[in-house]
Image (cartoon, rainbow, N blue to C red; front, side, top):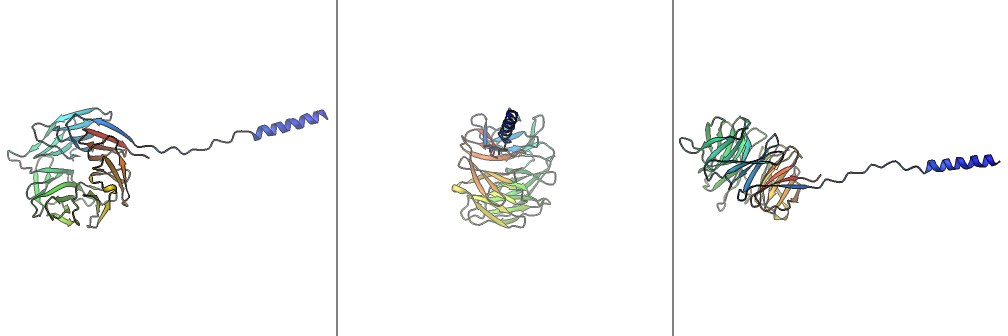
Length: 331
């Protein structure tokens, strides 16, 4: 009987041991990544304006007052390429059809070799560039830029320097052409705005064959600025108080931006949305369905240009703070 009792007790203890085993580990959902911001400080008074991220991840940024083009490598090391002369006011930067870095300035189109050598063209001595402003690489192995001479034009320059100017038909002597991009239809799309009272603001399309541009008037005081091709194969552009979208057949939609923020530059991102700078030290994100959110850039003072990197991070120029901010969105 004693043995039977001990056996029963052992079985009960074994059962208790089995039932008391720790439950299997449960899977936990990782916390959402917070946005991170890193500052790349440039020389005082350089006034960075428009950044550009090359396919190799190198960041280039025009220094409007510093008369230079800044190069920021993947380790954050900065090289300043000084443009000869003065009053160059470098602005837009693109990767040209020859693989070199091209930029526009006052009466200047320049390019930078892989070794960091500057070359290009200036108005004078038989060269008439006009007044270059925005710049883009066209679908025809040439570089195109908006030309703010009177009357304004869309200009084409080949890699060897051959020029062609096509006048934009407008009677407005104060017309500005602040943006240009290659559209999904392999034509050049640009913005036309003006400070003249009662001026008409438009989105323009210029074919590569040199035929005249077609203009689509915008309502009210739209004042379009920078323009890009979006991930939905439509044209997206900044406006005085919103973001505009236009299809290649001219259908226009305007999206309001919260808090009366004024957009200035925008970029299409690999995250299938568009990001833009505002006058309130914040950047905005707009989806292709028109949903807008604003995000603070802590420490920013005067955001000007924005560029999206292949890894969906953003590079943002801050003219007043002489800083280029590297922003990694929350995810």
